[in-house]
Amino acid sequence: MNKAKCEIKLCCFRDRKLETCADCTDYPCRILEAFWGKNGWKYGQDKRQLEFIRQHGYKEFLKKANTWKTEAELSHRENNNPHIYSIYKGGIEKNRASATAAFQQ
Image 1 (cartoon, rainbow, N blue to C red):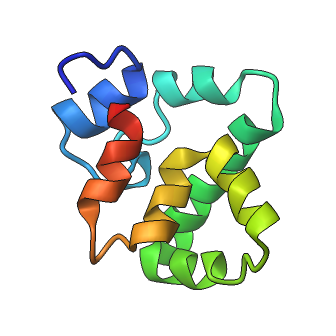
Image 2 (image 1 turned 180 degrees about the vertical axis):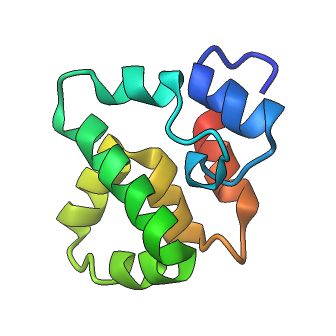
């Protein structure tokens, strides 16, 4: 984490020690607004997924993520949103390290 340059990683994991930005009391912040303002599907998808987590919680998000059936879908999600995919892959209750590791790379 000491080498991280991403503002989201630094704020969420290093400074606030959160699982995801969905847990932040300052959500949405200027960092996320700037991230979501970029062109590309993954930026909007990140916002939708974080908002789903805030409204329904991690348990419901994981249930929904378990409906992603095909490897192609999972691969696409992993490549476009490693933050959220890592929560699906490891399960937030079982493995916080997997969620954090996605942002430490």
